[in-house]
Image (cartoon, rainbow, N blue to C red; front, side, top):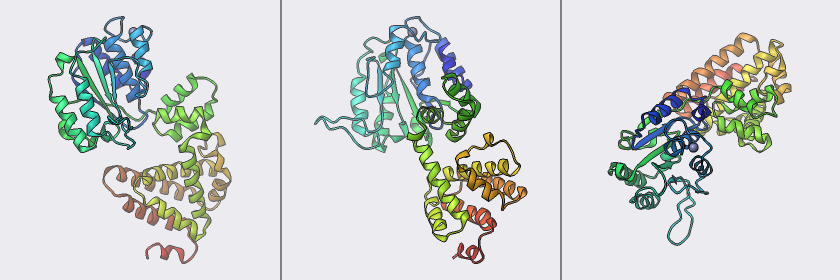
Length: 360
Ligand SMILES: [Zn+2]
Protein backbone atom coordinates (compact mmCIF):
# COMPACT_ATOMS: atom_id res chain seq x y z
CA UNK A 1 0.00 0.00 0.00
CA UNK A 2 1.46 3.38 -0.96
CA UNK A 3 1.60 4.93 2.52
CA UNK A 4 4.02 2.09 3.26
CA UNK A 5 6.41 3.95 0.96
CA UNK A 6 7.16 6.07 4.02
CA UNK A 7 7.18 3.03 6.30
CA UNK A 8 10.48 4.35 7.67
CA UNK A 9 8.31 7.05 9.32
CA UNK A 10 5.74 4.80 11.00
CA UNK A 11 4.14 7.53 13.14
CA UNK A 12 3.75 10.04 10.31
CA UNK A 13 2.44 7.30 7.99
CA UNK A 14 -0.19 6.30 10.55
CA UNK A 15 -1.32 9.89 11.10
CA UNK A 16 -1.63 10.59 7.38
CA UNK A 17 -3.45 7.34 6.69
CA UNK A 18 -5.93 8.15 9.47
CA UNK A 19 -6.59 11.64 8.03
CA UNK A 20 -7.31 10.14 4.63
CA UNK A 21 -9.52 7.35 5.98
CA UNK A 22 -11.59 9.82 7.99
CA UNK A 23 -12.06 11.82 4.80
CA UNK A 24 -11.60 15.15 6.48
CA UNK A 25 -8.38 17.05 5.84
CA UNK A 26 -7.49 20.13 7.89
CA UNK A 27 -6.57 23.43 6.23
CA UNK A 28 -2.89 23.22 7.04
CA UNK A 29 -0.28 20.74 8.19
CA UNK A 30 3.30 21.38 9.21
CA UNK A 31 5.54 18.46 8.25
CA UNK A 32 8.64 19.14 10.32
CA UNK A 33 11.83 17.16 10.77
CA UNK A 34 15.44 17.08 9.57
CA UNK A 35 16.41 17.22 5.88
CA UNK A 36 15.85 14.01 3.95
CA UNK A 37 13.38 12.52 6.44
CA UNK A 38 10.60 11.95 3.90
CA UNK A 39 8.49 15.12 4.21
CA UNK A 40 8.32 15.58 0.45
CA UNK A 41 7.35 11.95 -0.22
CA UNK A 42 4.65 12.30 2.43
CA UNK A 43 3.35 15.48 0.76
CA UNK A 44 3.09 13.65 -2.56
CA UNK A 45 1.26 10.69 -0.96
CA UNK A 46 -1.12 13.06 0.81
CA UNK A 47 -1.97 14.89 -2.43
CA UNK A 48 -2.44 11.57 -4.24
CA UNK A 49 -4.64 10.16 -1.49
CA UNK A 50 -6.88 13.24 -1.58
CA UNK A 51 -7.40 12.93 -5.31
CA UNK A 52 -6.93 9.27 -6.28
CA UNK A 53 -9.58 8.11 -8.75
CA UNK A 54 -9.79 4.88 -6.74
CA UNK A 55 -11.49 6.80 -3.93
CA UNK A 56 -10.58 7.42 -0.31
CA UNK A 57 -7.90 5.41 1.48
CA UNK A 58 -4.34 4.69 0.40
CA UNK A 59 -3.71 6.13 -3.08
CA UNK A 60 -3.46 3.54 -5.87
CA UNK A 61 -0.37 5.17 -7.37
CA UNK A 62 -1.56 4.09 -10.84
CA UNK A 63 -4.51 6.23 -11.90
CA UNK A 64 -4.24 9.40 -13.96
CA UNK A 65 -4.44 11.70 -10.91
CA UNK A 66 -1.85 9.70 -8.93
CA UNK A 67 0.48 9.61 -11.92
CA UNK A 68 0.18 13.33 -12.71
CA UNK A 69 0.65 14.32 -9.08
CA UNK A 70 3.76 12.14 -8.80
CA UNK A 71 5.22 13.84 -11.86
CA UNK A 72 4.26 17.29 -10.59
CA UNK A 73 6.28 17.17 -7.39
CA UNK A 74 9.09 19.10 -9.05
CA UNK A 75 8.12 22.77 -8.58
CA UNK A 76 9.63 23.52 -12.00
CA UNK A 77 7.46 21.04 -13.88
CA UNK A 78 3.85 21.34 -12.73
CA UNK A 79 1.51 19.02 -14.63
CA UNK A 80 -1.41 18.58 -12.27
CA UNK A 81 -3.16 21.96 -12.09
CA UNK A 82 -4.26 21.63 -8.47
CA UNK A 83 -0.92 20.74 -6.95
CA UNK A 84 0.64 24.14 -6.27
CA UNK A 85 4.19 24.77 -5.06
CA UNK A 86 5.70 27.62 -3.11
CA UNK A 87 9.48 27.24 -2.91
CA UNK A 88 12.57 29.42 -2.29
CA UNK A 89 14.06 31.31 -5.22
CA UNK A 90 11.41 30.39 -7.78
CA UNK A 91 9.32 33.53 -7.96
CA UNK A 92 9.14 35.08 -11.42
CA UNK A 93 8.33 38.80 -11.32
CA UNK A 94 6.10 40.53 -13.88
CA UNK A 95 9.18 41.63 -15.84
CA UNK A 96 9.96 37.95 -16.41
CA UNK A 97 13.00 37.91 -14.12
CA UNK A 98 13.36 34.92 -11.86
CA UNK A 99 13.85 35.63 -8.17
CA UNK A 100 17.35 34.37 -7.56
CA UNK A 101 17.58 34.55 -3.79
CA UNK A 102 17.31 31.58 -1.49
CA UNK A 103 14.14 32.87 0.18
CA UNK A 104 10.40 32.94 -0.41
CA UNK A 105 9.51 36.57 -1.07
CA UNK A 106 6.25 38.30 -0.18
CA UNK A 107 5.32 38.75 -3.85
CA UNK A 108 5.39 34.99 -4.30
CA UNK A 109 2.88 34.59 -1.47
CA UNK A 110 0.64 37.34 -2.90
CA UNK A 111 0.71 35.68 -6.31
CA UNK A 112 -0.23 32.39 -4.67
CA UNK A 113 -3.17 33.99 -2.83
CA UNK A 114 -4.57 35.38 -6.07
CA UNK A 115 -4.36 31.97 -7.71
CA UNK A 116 -6.42 30.42 -4.93
CA UNK A 117 -9.58 32.51 -5.26
CA UNK A 118 -11.32 29.94 -7.43
CA UNK A 119 -12.23 26.36 -6.66
CA UNK A 120 -9.82 23.64 -7.87
CA UNK A 121 -9.93 22.85 -11.59
CA UNK A 122 -9.91 19.06 -11.44
CA UNK A 123 -9.06 18.04 -7.88
CA UNK A 124 -11.37 16.98 -5.08
CA UNK A 125 -8.90 18.83 -2.88
CA UNK A 126 -6.20 21.23 -4.02
CA UNK A 127 -2.87 20.85 -2.22
CA UNK A 128 -0.37 23.69 -1.81
CA UNK A 129 3.11 22.47 -0.86
CA UNK A 130 5.32 25.11 0.79
CA UNK A 131 8.86 23.78 0.43
CA UNK A 132 11.36 24.95 3.08
CA UNK A 133 8.57 27.04 4.58
CA UNK A 134 11.01 28.57 7.10
CA UNK A 135 12.64 30.41 4.19
CA UNK A 136 9.65 32.70 3.88
CA UNK A 137 10.86 36.24 4.59
CA UNK A 138 9.10 37.99 7.51
CA UNK A 139 6.77 39.92 5.18
CA UNK A 140 6.04 36.71 3.30
CA UNK A 141 5.18 34.96 6.56
CA UNK A 142 2.74 37.72 7.47
CA UNK A 143 1.08 37.52 4.06
CA UNK A 144 0.94 33.75 4.35
CA UNK A 145 -0.68 34.02 7.77
CA UNK A 146 -3.50 36.08 6.22
CA UNK A 147 -4.00 33.32 3.66
CA UNK A 148 -4.32 30.75 6.44
CA UNK A 149 -6.90 32.93 8.17
CA UNK A 150 -9.19 33.03 5.14
CA UNK A 151 -12.14 30.64 4.85
CA UNK A 152 -10.35 27.94 2.91
CA UNK A 153 -13.05 25.31 3.00
CA UNK A 154 -15.02 26.76 0.11
CA UNK A 155 -11.94 26.63 -2.14
CA UNK A 156 -11.20 23.04 -0.99
CA UNK A 157 -7.51 23.67 -0.33
CA UNK A 158 -4.99 22.20 2.12
CA UNK A 159 -1.57 23.69 2.79
CA UNK A 160 1.38 21.43 3.55
CA UNK A 161 4.29 23.34 5.06
CA UNK A 162 7.57 21.41 4.93
CA UNK A 163 10.33 22.58 7.24
CA UNK A 164 13.53 21.41 8.90
CA UNK A 165 13.54 24.58 11.05
CA UNK A 166 9.96 25.11 12.22
CA UNK A 167 11.16 27.42 15.01
CA UNK A 168 11.89 30.00 12.27
CA UNK A 169 8.17 30.21 11.48
CA UNK A 170 5.85 32.70 13.17
CA UNK A 171 4.19 31.09 16.21
CA UNK A 172 0.87 32.24 14.75
CA UNK A 173 1.55 30.21 11.59
CA UNK A 174 2.59 27.15 13.56
CA UNK A 175 -0.48 27.31 15.77
CA UNK A 176 -2.73 27.21 12.69
CA UNK A 177 -1.09 24.05 11.38
CA UNK A 178 -1.45 20.48 12.59
CA UNK A 179 2.12 19.37 13.24
CA UNK A 180 3.38 16.03 11.93
CA UNK A 181 6.90 15.13 13.05
CA UNK A 182 9.38 13.32 10.82
CA UNK A 183 12.24 11.72 12.77
CA UNK A 184 15.74 11.20 11.36
CA UNK A 185 15.52 7.99 9.34
CA UNK A 186 17.15 5.08 11.26
CA UNK A 187 20.32 3.72 9.64
CA UNK A 188 18.78 0.22 9.28
CA UNK A 189 15.83 1.67 7.33
CA UNK A 190 18.21 3.56 5.04
CA UNK A 191 20.21 0.37 4.44
CA UNK A 192 17.02 -1.56 3.58
CA UNK A 193 15.94 1.15 1.16
CA UNK A 194 19.36 1.30 -0.53
CA UNK A 195 19.55 -2.49 -0.87
CA UNK A 196 15.99 -2.72 -2.23
CA UNK A 197 17.09 -0.61 -5.21
CA UNK A 198 19.68 -3.30 -6.03
CA UNK A 199 23.21 -3.01 -7.37
CA UNK A 200 24.79 -2.15 -4.03
CA UNK A 201 26.79 -4.27 -1.59
CA UNK A 202 25.68 -4.38 2.00
CA UNK A 203 28.95 -2.87 3.27
CA UNK A 204 28.58 0.12 0.92
CA UNK A 205 24.94 0.59 1.91
CA UNK A 206 25.96 0.59 5.58
CA UNK A 207 28.67 3.18 4.91
CA UNK A 208 26.35 5.53 3.01
CA UNK A 209 23.68 5.12 5.69
CA UNK A 210 26.07 6.10 8.47
CA UNK A 211 27.53 9.02 6.56
CA UNK A 212 24.05 10.26 5.66
CA UNK A 213 23.15 10.36 9.36
CA UNK A 214 19.37 10.02 9.17
CA UNK A 215 19.03 11.80 5.82
CA UNK A 216 17.50 9.27 3.44
CA UNK A 217 17.69 11.65 0.49
CA UNK A 218 21.42 12.22 1.05
CA UNK A 219 21.99 8.46 1.24
CA UNK A 220 20.15 7.89 -2.04
CA UNK A 221 22.14 10.67 -3.73
CA UNK A 222 25.36 9.29 -2.29
CA UNK A 223 24.63 5.76 -3.48
CA UNK A 224 23.74 7.01 -6.96
CA UNK A 225 26.98 8.95 -7.42
CA UNK A 226 29.42 8.88 -4.49
CA UNK A 227 32.01 11.09 -6.21
CA UNK A 228 29.55 13.92 -6.86
CA UNK A 229 28.29 14.19 -3.31
CA UNK A 230 29.23 17.28 -1.29
CA UNK A 231 28.91 15.11 1.81
CA UNK A 232 31.85 13.00 0.66
CA UNK A 233 33.97 16.02 -0.30
CA UNK A 234 33.29 17.82 3.00
CA UNK A 235 34.05 14.71 4.97
CA UNK A 236 37.36 14.25 3.17
CA UNK A 237 38.25 17.93 3.80
CA UNK A 238 37.55 17.66 7.51
CA UNK A 239 39.36 14.38 7.97
CA UNK A 240 42.39 15.79 6.17
CA UNK A 241 42.37 18.79 8.54
CA UNK A 242 41.92 16.55 11.56
CA UNK A 243 44.74 14.26 10.50
CA UNK A 244 46.95 17.34 10.08
CA UNK A 245 46.12 18.39 13.65
CA UNK A 246 46.99 15.06 15.21
CA UNK A 247 50.11 14.81 13.06
CA UNK A 248 51.37 17.94 14.79
CA UNK A 249 52.08 20.91 12.49
CA UNK A 250 50.75 24.18 13.89
CA UNK A 251 49.38 25.33 10.53
CA UNK A 252 46.95 22.41 10.44
CA UNK A 253 45.80 23.23 13.94
CA UNK A 254 45.06 26.89 13.15
CA UNK A 255 43.04 26.00 10.07
CA UNK A 256 41.08 23.35 11.92
CA UNK A 257 40.19 25.80 14.67
CA UNK A 258 39.24 28.63 12.30
CA UNK A 259 36.95 26.42 10.21
CA UNK A 260 35.52 24.69 13.24
CA UNK A 261 34.49 27.95 14.89
CA UNK A 262 31.93 28.61 12.20
CA UNK A 263 28.67 27.76 13.95
CA UNK A 264 27.22 25.75 11.09
CA UNK A 265 30.26 23.54 10.87
CA UNK A 266 30.34 22.39 14.49
CA UNK A 267 27.61 19.69 14.53
CA UNK A 268 28.97 18.19 11.32
CA UNK A 269 32.51 18.29 12.62
CA UNK A 270 31.70 16.69 15.94
CA UNK A 271 29.63 13.93 14.30
CA UNK A 272 32.57 13.23 12.07
CA UNK A 273 35.00 13.07 14.99
CA UNK A 274 32.67 10.71 16.88
CA UNK A 275 32.65 8.38 13.88
CA UNK A 276 36.39 8.66 13.47
CA UNK A 277 37.04 7.77 17.13
CA UNK A 278 34.66 4.81 16.89
CA UNK A 279 36.69 3.64 13.92
CA UNK A 280 39.77 4.05 16.07
CA UNK A 281 38.32 1.57 18.59
CA UNK A 282 37.57 -0.94 15.83
CA UNK A 283 41.10 -0.64 14.43
CA UNK A 284 42.75 -0.82 17.84
CA UNK A 285 40.81 -3.90 18.91
CA UNK A 286 41.73 -5.62 15.65
CA UNK A 287 38.09 -5.67 14.52
CA UNK A 288 36.82 -6.41 11.04
CA UNK A 289 37.78 -3.46 8.77
CA UNK A 290 34.33 -3.72 7.17
CA UNK A 291 33.01 -2.11 10.36
CA UNK A 292 35.26 0.91 9.84
CA UNK A 293 33.16 3.75 8.42
CA UNK A 294 36.10 5.82 7.23
CA UNK A 295 37.75 2.90 5.52
CA UNK A 296 39.60 5.17 3.11
CA UNK A 297 41.51 6.70 6.07
CA UNK A 298 42.76 3.38 7.42
CA UNK A 299 46.46 4.38 7.43
CA UNK A 300 45.87 7.49 9.56
CA UNK A 301 43.56 5.50 11.86
CA UNK A 302 46.23 2.83 12.37
CA UNK A 303 48.86 5.47 13.15
CA UNK A 304 46.58 7.15 15.70
CA UNK A 305 45.48 3.84 17.22
CA UNK A 306 49.11 3.07 18.01
CA UNK A 307 49.45 6.20 20.18
CA UNK A 308 46.22 6.06 22.22
CA UNK A 309 44.86 3.56 24.71
CA UNK A 310 41.30 2.23 24.61
CA UNK A 311 39.97 3.99 27.74
CA UNK A 312 41.22 7.36 26.41
CA UNK A 313 39.41 6.81 23.10
CA UNK A 314 36.21 5.88 24.95
CA UNK A 315 36.55 8.96 27.17
CA UNK A 316 36.88 11.17 24.11
CA UNK A 317 33.83 9.64 22.45
CA UNK A 318 31.81 10.28 25.61
CA UNK A 319 32.97 13.90 25.70
CA UNK A 320 32.24 14.39 22.00
CA UNK A 321 28.74 12.97 22.44
CA UNK A 322 28.16 15.30 25.41
CA UNK A 323 29.39 18.36 23.48
CA UNK A 324 27.24 17.38 20.52
CA UNK A 325 24.15 17.09 22.73
CA UNK A 326 24.83 20.47 24.35
CA UNK A 327 25.29 22.06 20.94
CA UNK A 328 21.82 20.92 19.88
CA UNK A 329 20.22 22.37 22.95
CA UNK A 330 21.95 25.45 24.26
CA UNK A 331 25.62 26.15 23.65
CA UNK A 332 27.11 28.28 20.92
CA UNK A 333 29.51 26.96 18.32
CA UNK A 334 32.50 28.82 19.73
CA UNK A 335 31.90 27.41 23.23
CA UNK A 336 31.61 23.95 21.74
CA UNK A 337 34.94 24.53 20.02
CA UNK A 338 36.52 25.57 23.33
CA UNK A 339 35.22 22.39 24.94
CA UNK A 340 36.52 20.37 22.04
CA UNK A 341 39.96 21.96 22.32
CA UNK A 342 40.17 21.56 26.08
CA UNK A 343 38.89 18.01 26.26
CA UNK A 344 40.09 16.43 23.09
CA UNK A 345 43.07 18.23 21.67
CA UNK A 346 44.91 18.95 24.91
CA UNK A 347 44.56 15.33 25.89
CA UNK A 348 45.80 14.30 22.47
CA UNK A 349 49.35 14.46 23.82
CA UNK A 350 50.23 17.57 21.88
CA UNK A 351 53.95 18.31 21.56
CA UNK A 352 55.36 20.27 24.52
CA UNK A 353 54.39 23.95 24.46
CA UNK A 354 51.46 23.60 22.05
CA UNK A 355 48.89 22.95 24.75
CA UNK A 356 49.74 26.31 26.39
CA UNK A 357 49.25 28.16 23.13
CA UNK A 358 45.65 26.96 22.99
CA UNK A 359 44.66 29.41 25.70
CA UNK A 360 46.35 32.56 24.51
ZN1 LIG B 1 -4.83 6.71 -7.82
